[in-house]
Amino acid sequence: MSRIGKRPISVPKQVTLTINGQEVTVKGPKGELSRVLPPEVVVEQEGETVNVKRASESRTARQRHGLCRTLVSNMVEGVSNGFERRLEIQGVGYRAAVQGTNLILNVGYSKPVEIIPPEGIRVAVENNTNVIISGIDKEIVGNTAARVRAVRPPEPYKGKGIRYQGEVVRRKAGKTGKGGKK
Image (cartoon, rainbow, N blue to C red):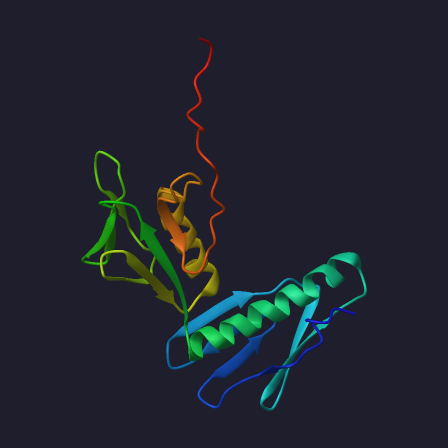
């Protein structure tokens, strides 16, 4: 039995969850999310809690049980609290700015890199080097943060680049500088 899948999901007072067949819709103070779950799982609401159960004991049902429970849980948390990812920019002259809703990155290329966030995602910049990506859908927030990080991932020699806040980049030793033949 999936340890994650059998845990019930508690629904806060300000959040309403509706189940229409395999489609689960969650409305809350931050917005509304909807997702169609696979037919291998069944979602049941009992008052303030929601349980995700398997429709059968097939292999795919067992595989998707915990996943679907986590997806529904993330939807409930997203519409009530929201999600955010923080990125740090390190490097001399590297900086970020917000222009309208777009993110402009100056990270050592000949031209600035412009990233257009998807619908429902907000981008903010603190101190020119900290980027905050927030929204109600955890998947889209994470994918947007990964797209921003992929513009200039941290390199192992000097540590320059864009990294997640708290990410540890293992550093490599450079060349020793010893001469060759004499």
